[in-house]
Length: 378
Image 1 (cartoon, one colour):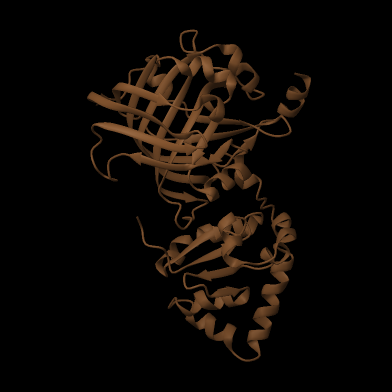
Image 2 (cartoon, rainbow, N blue to C red):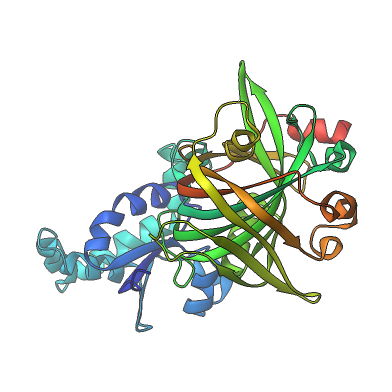
């Protein structure tokens, strides 16, 4: 795991100019040992210990030793440590000019949203798919245990604007356990939240767009051990995350995948698990196979509280897949996933796979036009 940075430059993630330019300077800040993060991240408020009405008033710098700087002092801190901006630091710190610099910063900070609008830099437009990533990570050592369920169980959960994606007429759900590694959200690494486990239950949908079939997944429940991860996912996507204690049996990062993989989580019903053993040799699945269907859906869809649907792209290369022996799901199905899934998940799975995974990029979400009205009509 990478060492914790020297500090974090914290910016307003709802300001178009801030959202565009702070990540642009992230490589330069990284050379100073500084990471970046939006002020809206839950861990930021926890560390800064500022009231909510003061949190977003200024650009901020939080150093790993707890020291904090705000406003124009953040610029001076950075300019002083870069040789090519040092002359600007001398001007910004000089008696008389310091006050001018501070006033110029204050004028921008207090009017940054108006400036963003005037320059047509809208934070919401930068959230369109393909504009910039929301999340980058490694998804590794995937255990995928698949069950056939009655389509009637899934139909009420299908987001507006999509339809169930069936495999040879069968409605499948998958319990998937895997490792998040080297995670970055909006270009920032959340301290203590780069590497963690996730177990989710998902099903498959499709959406037709100008002759293109977008095959995607919908999550029924996602389990993680980190509260900040769940909070960000709920805030950005309204994903159904739940925070639980977790542990796993997987290779160390970089090791070859072999043997049995196991992901466990703890609720009031005790420790539960999903597990499987990779057997044979791995290969990229052929088109039309069940393993290709399960592993090669590259879109995500999430129903929102108002009935609309968010769509986001999930980019990764095709994964190498092993067949899995001795697949196991030992879970409190009713408590974790809901009573409608008891029948479908209580018997043996129809298939199970193990995948090595890859780097993954998840785009900013976009709301599908017309889905609120479609949901209300239904």
